[in-house]
Image (cartoon, rainbow, N blue to C red; front, top):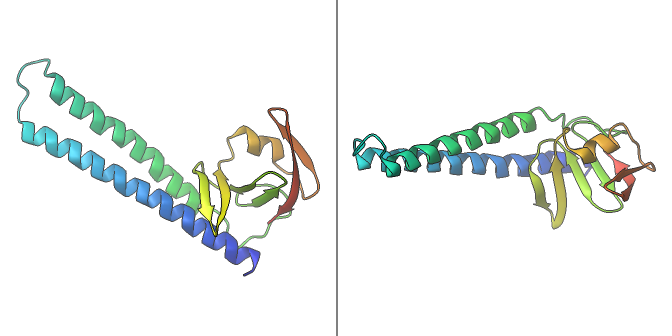
Length: 150
């Protein structure tokens, strides 16, 4: 399979992971709301159980917002473009790891290998931005050599 096809599959895997996360968070929000509704009206002004449920729901809602932002970022990845230097949408193969510059998802197992889906806001990306195959960059005293960019 060509590199563009691999990148499309990698993106599809990342989207699947994040959409599953979104679905789980929606389920958690609904469960917290259901428990709160079943519990009924607050027993007194400082009802700790109901307050706990509402805080959980609000926490999950914030996480859901972030997860939906990641899905939106992934949907903007230019998969048809093959890169020669590191930028948003590139797959970067270094001597230490494989990196997909897309959204902050973290480690993604893809075709028996580990890729790290990162955003453009992390120090690793900032250190390698604009670099090409054969160039090096350093993060936390670790030296990386870029083998491929596509």
